[in-house]
Image 1 (cartoon, rainbow, N blue to C red):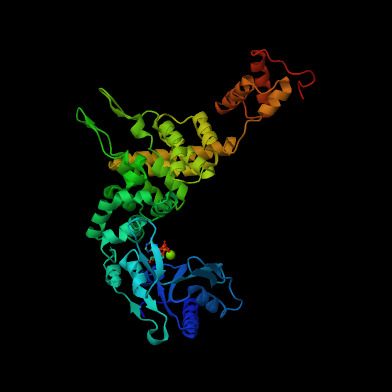
Image 2 (image 1 turned 30 degrees about the horizontal axis):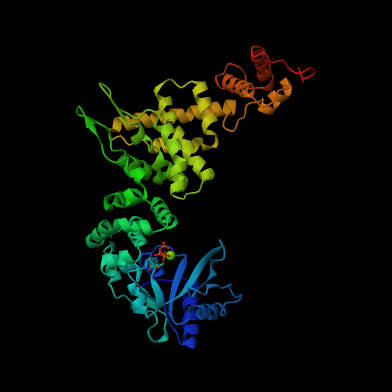
Length: 484
Ligand code: ATP
Ligand code: MG
């Protein structure tokens, strides 16, 4: 045996062997489960490949459990799966998926393979990488034997991503595999075999036939890895990034005029992404790191005697966020708005550290960032990528000071989830007017006066202030409303 399994898994395999014996079907556990067990990664799903009727086998195995788990199946694909509890205490389950062994044959005229039943060997041939083609027999005659036709075990030991067949064949059959190669290299810390990588470079264009959803799923898995920069660097060097996310490659490179250059914003972004990945697994905060400087290429200017500037890149970048989310088919919901907000605000804490930090500036930041203030501070710290140790130390100390001031002011003024004490409805009601510019103006004046500290944060103070300003706008309270 090459792997160590839990009692739940061993019992499962015994039952599969028993049912398969009765049905006279050959059966193997294959792919990600075997790979992850060998390298000691946690596994949540087990792929079972069966030379025979997989749906029938799945039902026969499920029937050996009490209570019998519900079997979901897809008749057209000949696949079935069910879940069994892995850990009764925390509700973890193992998803057991049964598929019939398949052979793929491609006709030049069609992108879609014709899938026909095949042997285990056929099935291993159509797997993406040698490390994903390992199978362990669950048959009585050779139970537990590893079937490894492509020396995947050695590639696992040597940490190598290598296609089982000639790489161009494997990739042209399903171009998504090019992204999977990079994703596995990133997740597992493996090297892509040079020949395999060259085939990705040569075949990169073919990624265009893959649906955006499948592409984005791989991008997100790369982002969720421990060191996501590895994947983006490979995507960039292979030419895939230019095709699947050109806005990000626009960040790459440094231009020089009069001997003055700027930093390479692509590699800066990758460093920020790795920095933030140390502190959070939150996918959307990691997306904010990827997009924080996305407005730089569009705002880049060379100012004589001064150097390169990117004025307003946070505003332009913020505006790009919905378009990028839409084109990548990422959700257009509060996750997108969260990322946009962080991109828009990512310079604010930095600019604070340069002046003396007034209460009003802190209140304003708290008001604008709201619930996102902690995420924003995390992004800003990750954004410090200077190689100058002194500079980094100074920035970090400044941020520490900003954090202290944020706590202090929040304690005192409670701005974080604050809404001004007088709403638009109240203004319309008091002055007997409909929705109009004046309502908005008054609302803004009140909010500004409180944030600036000109008036106290209370209803009475805001009410008096409003009456005063309204008088100058020819607005009078409706009779009887005064002093309500
Ligand atoms: P993870 O579950 O971490 O994404 P995995 O290797 O288990 O990794 P799955 O997508 O669950 O990946 O697929 C299970 C197995 O199916 C793989 O190990 C591989 O053998 C095979 N496989 C999946 N997708 C492909 C593909 N596009 N081309 C060839 N084989 C694939
Ligand atoms: Mg899997």
